[in-house]
Length: 616
Image (cartoon, rainbow, N blue to C red):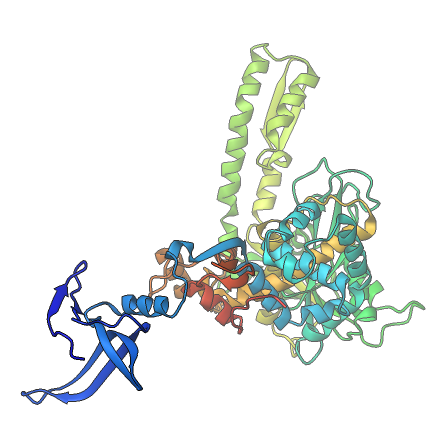
């Protein structure tokens, strides 16, 4: 049968669609979308063109013949509209985009995934011990200390709000599980640290055979811990009980071992204990121990290099440390070997003294530290300004009695740590405060001076090398800042069982080990100085490279991406979430990551890994 060719043009919206009005239209057969492509067509101007068109057609049977009729020309419609028509005709259920999927849950993922990736790269899980729930809990505690330091109870709650808890299987852990994992980790401390020492202090990775050692303290809450004692507080918490802990690192400040001591332990005793660990438990001989002044004393050196029967050690340890101020004053007194004329042409001079037989003394004068006299005068003047109203009250008779006067003076005289430079005389009706000028001048004479002592022969390490090795202690001090406040928040300590306190400090040390490597890897994304300049003069103050100064000035890289602090980068990575997605018409959910930012992609690229959907 012939059908009419009369055509009606209908324009829905802005797209014209041609519908064919069939005089005898077929009412049977399903309609479908047909796409037709024509390539290689050449127009009258000789230009090659490609055409594509889309039609809505119905297939029907006329006797024994299958025929098609065009219902509409869809070519003018956008491709996505044609796709929707095609999908609908094929029986697919079409829903509005906003209703197509439901995100049933979204949890932070990127930060814990990045730290876990670094832990895997370093072999930390295997380092902790054999696979099992205890290891997973210990690893989760270490990663949590890097990402979100907090109490064990708050950490336990937080695990359920990140992918860390679910992927490591610790989201259902109890506080007893955590304490059991800490006890398990504490028993593994010696083999863990022995492996770290093999990696970073053995002769092959460390030809110089040098280790850095320093001591710090943190206060405790409560009074029941056997390690808690009163001592010199490096946190300024003089009224609190505390613990002490010594940190051992390689020359770059990479943490290797930590030991916890009672809060009243002196630096020399801590040095001996850690040096014994290095020799006896790590099996490292002929080491050079670099420690701060007051830590490595002559008596401790002698004890260190003697065996239990009193005979000398076959492989004596060498050391690098500095003299305290009284010893330096003796070297300067009565035409001693240390005189200002030594520094007329240079900031470094090597001297000897009968008081230190067999040792080299490298005297240094840092002009930047020599400016301390001006600062001291400013602090003394500020203290006198605080004391002036108290003196006026006593003179006017408004403050009487030696006790009350002493209380008021005590509140202000040590605020700027200058109380030692004042002579204070108090009676019931008088107050006299004068400067100890001779003592001030004596201290000022030492401004900028320090003297390093070592038995290492000059043929093995020259004087600038000795100074550089000693100044590397700044890396241990940096680690202490990261452990105590900047990153890992070790303090205050709430545990009261001795083994739990030691395990807590060990967790912080291993987290510092992770942080050290993360900071190195992410240096291009952060304000870290990637290539600090080596100073021509080892005594001179360290400086930042021009690239690092540019980072601090512009805050963005040449492509416009912002630089981050280490903590800020972790926070940004946390915005990379893992979402549980449920599609309309289904009951199951599918895990999907949000689209990562360029910074997030780069952060994982610098770690040498793709962004994982799950941690394990």
